[in-house]
Image (cartoon, one colour):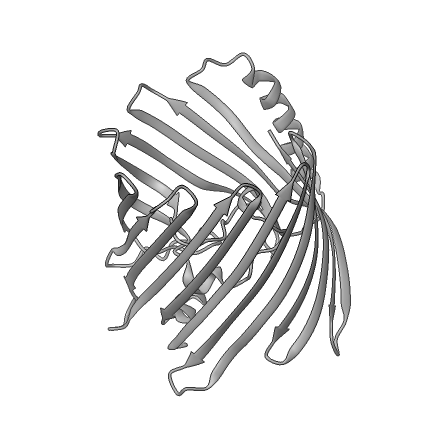
Length: 329
């Protein structure tokens, strides 16, 4: 599982103190009110061929997940996050939405929420290794503001989200003049197999072009073994991600991953690859990487993750090493 890096500064320390206070108080709160979250910290070392090497250690991310169950149908969720995004420290309202269960099969949520798309989650608690591939911004929907409905049947699920725009993984919305749409079809033919497909579209501001994202993934999980494969395509996503920089492009990417967990030990192997071409057919970015990541469950609340990653981006190789401590509460 996991990701990122930053320095432990006063704001992070104050959040940790607040986390301790919240954790103590949560034991006395009614069963309608829940507080959880995580603290993610790491040491990382990166070495780029022909360039410099650097290392970093500290708090990557701190998050509080607050939930309130009004009744058996209506609930509210708020996620508050601290992280260093590379340009400075930020405290963000990551998610804030209400959910209503119309029936046992159909529910609706409205507010600010994370897209359903993508095999790899945005949070470190949902990863099988330390780092994400790095291609999510080109193919996943990101954080969105709008309304979403999901229907779950016997061995399948369908979802539709109507949002201001598809958002991005920094949580910034473009507030475009036309809404964006995300559709999902999930098939679970057996307890071990899950297959999901997503088609998302949004209009680029001030142009006649649309952003389209296609994300397909499948997983097989039995006992200690989990296998997954993902394939993505997109059009005009880089222009969207880079703030409308005018880079009309097509992108494609995939990953293959395997994880084996036994007792308190786990091992993840992953290969990923993606390519972005401009409208003229020139290669804008060509990247691939291999990751090996063992992990150890120290206790119910502490996971240690170790990672070695070899990347090649536009014919430049780099080595990356990480040691992560992930504390959940």
